[in-house]
Image (tube, helix red, strand yellow):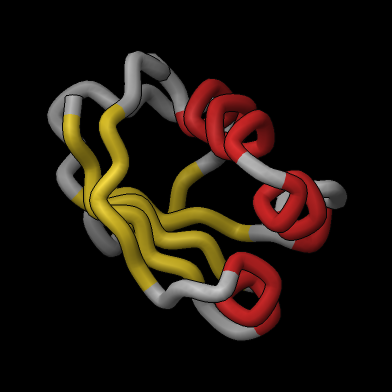
Length: 79
């Protein structure tokens, strides 16, 4: 599935992009994060401490175990 992924604050600074289109086979937010971490060091650094990251799915706060089915946009931001 294709998702629009948004990064805010220090996540955007570490990754170097405010948004991107991501093709993923992940079923949950945690699965997406695992895929992103494997891309490059900058993603691994940005997602190294998930206690400092919040997520919203289609502008609704969610948990990392939330399913991605039907989701169009994922946003990551600090608490």
